[in-house]
Amino acid sequence: MDEKLYAKCSCQHCGTHIEFPLEAAGRTLACPHCQEPTELSRQAPPVAQFRPTVAEVVGAFHGSIVRPRVPPRYHAGLLLVTAMMILLPLIYVALVGALIWGMDYFAVHYRFLVETLHGEPRWYLLKLLAYAGPLFIGGVLVLFMVKPLFARRTGQPEPMTLDPATEPALFAFVAKICDTVGAPMPGQIHLDCHLNASASLKEGAGNFFGKQTVLTIGLPLVAGVNMQEFAGIIAHEFGHLTQGFGMRLSYVIRSINEWFARVAYERDTWDVWLDAWAEEVDDWRTMLVTHVTRLAVWLSRALLKLLMHAGHGVSCFLMRQMEYNADDYMIKVAGTETFEHTARRLVILGEASQQSYKVMRTTWDRSRHLPDNFPAFLARVERELTAEQHSKVAERMAQSQSGIFDTHPSVSDRLARAQQANEPGVFKLAQPATQLFGDFDTVAKAVTVQHYKNELGLPCEAASLQPADSLETVQAVQPQG
Image (cartoon, rainbow, N blue to C red; front, side, top):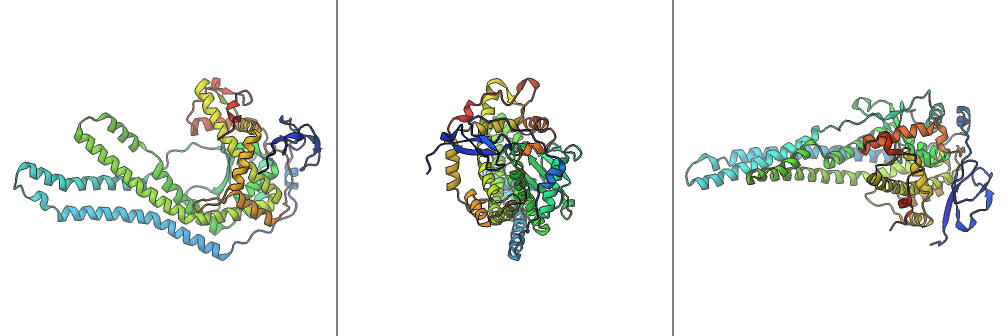
């Protein structure tokens, strides 16, 4: 392994991140992206502010791409996996029906246990328990097995939705990418505070055969990449939507997987009520009932988890192939070199995201302070990662391998495919992606507050919010084991 220590700075002209050996700090060289002279510094230099117009954003796309063809066997595999995924909930329903039939059979054929009063009362009580006990346990189990079939997702907060009139450059950027890859323009663009982006069909059974899509953009992602990298990421997400048939089948697969995960792991009011009841009772008979009920809940969820893992295993290989297919669009739009840089960059940003939440947890516990702009705070933590941390992340990337139960290919496998493609890319604007927004900081602060309240459950009084560059981040720069 290369023992050199590396640092990172941003170009003073285009804002692109440049990684360099520590001994090169202080030197001036041509930026590999914009070719302008820039000084290699361990301190993040101020980025030149350049906000492109709509015409400049659209004009930065040069030429078209040859859209990757999906072989018929891919669609056949997708159809087969979808059929198997639909079969799993039907198996669950069949098991519920079998349990009900078993209870009915037991109630009819073992009724003789309670039809006679001969013998001592204790013996009759024992027979009554032998008859009623299995029926009670079976009834509770049926109840808690049927409940997930009608479980609804808890009320979700409304996401922040962008207005095309206030963000013309971003909408023009997205529209041009959709036109380039052959995907439908999303009806809405939502913002959240995750290090991710996604494009999907609009939720609702009525839209399954429609074309309404939604693009969700994570602002920490925007704050961590430049426009060329961001274009590749958005092209990847829309690459999933280029095949109408495949898009709908993959929607079914993902929806069933998400349903299994939600009903198997998500606690509801019944769980809270059972926990409270179990803590309050002190009579042994009532305790027996509560423990039997909790056993029934555990059994129903164990069955759901088993089916969930079965569905996960069935769909993993196909999901990885879908990621490879979407990568092809990203490579063609952004180019092989940018794809490689973005893949590595996302892993570094993921490390910074973990460190950011650790620091926030500590500062919240100590002083009830939170950064007022989480994307800016994450970007700051990423800049302060040590060379040792970078080295460990690079080592993990090099050693990564795609597992049988992985829904995404490993970084090393994706990089190998990108190198084989050797594409130049059709979009070359390398300014920070934040400049696609009219006022990124204001939007980021609003989304940050929503993230704290709706997802982290933290009260966000004005006194607890501090500028992102004023919070202590010493915990974030400690080497991780």
